[in-house]
Length: 266
Ligand SMILES: Nc1ncnc2c1ncn2[C@@H]1O[C@H](COP(=O)(O)OP(=O)(O)OP(=O)(O)O)[C@@H](O)[C@H]1O
Ligand SMILES: [Mg+2]
Image 1 (cartoon, rainbow, N blue to C red):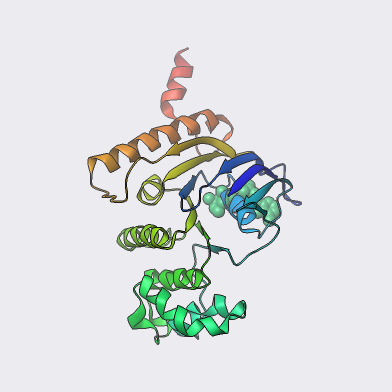
Image 2: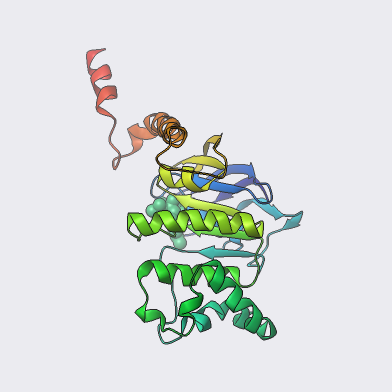
């Protein structure tokens, strides 16, 4: 995927939300987009998904210009948005049903339910499932049409830490198994380190890429290992550096005390 000089201004907004955003994502890569609330992460994800047209620049996937929504990319949100009156299997089949691929449902739905470890729940009503299980159903629904690109907008942020961790691991493993390219929006550095091969840090007003860093861990990511912790610490420090540069115009994230003291004494 090639993102080239993307800029975006909402018609009813005040000024540009994205400015000159450029980066590349390799096939099969997991990219984390990190940035504070309002910096334009969801806007960028909508542009990548073809759900919004950017006012400037272009997005290409495999050499083809993204001009609208495509079955090759699918987006997952914080809320699973399932149909409560349907079973797990029926919900998982929705993407295929909406794209009129009825013939694939019988074989594909059991496959994706196995991937998300819900095969035993196929006939259950989704209302009887936990939040984490519901998010797994949403994941199965996303995977059923065999997309190449999975766009995740903080999909685990409403879950408890334990459930979140297991989904983070599973999504990374499933993505690797299926050869998916994944772009994950998150506020959580540990989540980025758990899931991604690379992190892009965004700053706000207007949203742009401030740093791009590889996450140098293999596939065995143990949150308790020294390597993992070192990577979290390194990215936290990088983020703090960016946030400090950005801080003076930001009323929600006040200037760090150390900076104020330095200014006061000079
Ligand atoms: N439809 C819209 N019309 C006008 N302005 C909008 C619209 N959608 C978003 N914005 C503005 O664009 C900016 C970026 O919003 P966006 O939702 O992309 O941020 P975000 O990084 O995803 O934030 P969060 O982490 O809170 O989800 C915000 O200032 C927001 O108020
Ligand atoms: Mg958002």
